Image 1 (spheres, rainbow, N blue to C red):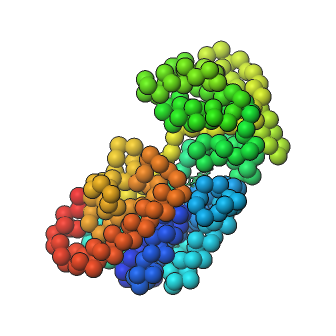
Image 2: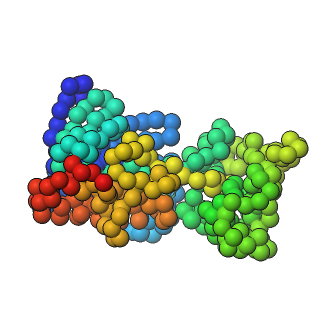
Image 3: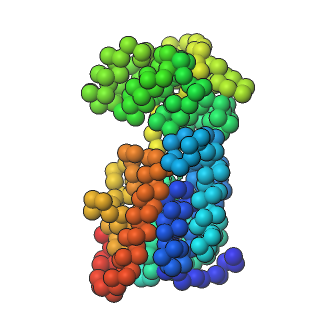
Length: 335
Ligand SMILES: Cc1cc2nc3c(=O)[nH]c(=O)nc-3n(C[C@H](O)[C@H](O)[C@H](O)COP(=O)(O)OP(=O)(O)OC[C@H]3O[C@@H](n4cnc5c(N)ncnc54)[C@H](O)[C@@H]3O)c2cc1C
């Protein structure tokens, strides 16, 4: 689209992971003619979301033999398109919550006015940043950022698995992986854990879990599949090699909410607040949030799809009940 394009849409959905496409399917079938701004292509994000980077999804209901992540996402998109969803392959860089209809601006300079907005921009797992780590994560070569998603896959069974991190997520991942692994080694850059006392105690007491204290991963070995790690001692600088059959990186997630600062209320960790339990409305009536961008706890495709459905229904009902006209002042007042 040209720089001067201006659109007015009833519902704009930002993001194209399971949350965004599910919101689109529901909105389209409710004849709300949704417009999806699916995100641009960058090194860490592509349309289709996080599942585009994974080979095997075994826990999404309806696929008894599992499904390739890219196939799942492209099929969700096709399903949304079938009901008339329209798509723009750009990022949203700005939302003005004080103007109604809400004014959105994209990377390409398109100005979109929206009666309701559903934010479904996800959260990116943080990686260590090593070249072979990224390559093996994308090829299904035994590197993952999601133990609950991938831990049960056959190639991780009875292996020595490394978990990198020292917080609650790392402890949870390590404990979960003990169900399948021969041994789990937690690699942590300090000599004490950041995790809560109870999670740390559970991990420390588990006989399948060992610790590589004061250690960072400096290299990931393996061509088709991971074979080991090079660890460096953060105190002495000494290096050693550790043979592993899998690497789980659990050093946190970064919600894609940079463009939402001063738009809706965010939690301290940057995730979108949805103040009413079991509702997807944000602090600004008419702006809804779905998927990992508002969920720092479950972070699964099926929960993202579930909240995408909820956001579409919430937006539809909010508009049907008069939208901003029924609640004058709320939007302009913001949060
Ligand atoms: C390696 C890996 C494997 C996984 N495996 C599984 C699994 O097996 N099963 C499972 O249930 N879950 C799995 N997950 C988790 C699952 O991928 C997420 O829970 C799910 O994708 C979240 O969906 P979402 O729609 O909220 O966000 P995402 O899938 O993250 O999608 C967000 C979308 O928003 C777009 N976007 C971001 N910013 C903007 C912007 N400013 N403007 C426009 N668009 C934007 C992005 O490009 C992206 O398309 C895995 C995750 C990872 C990292």
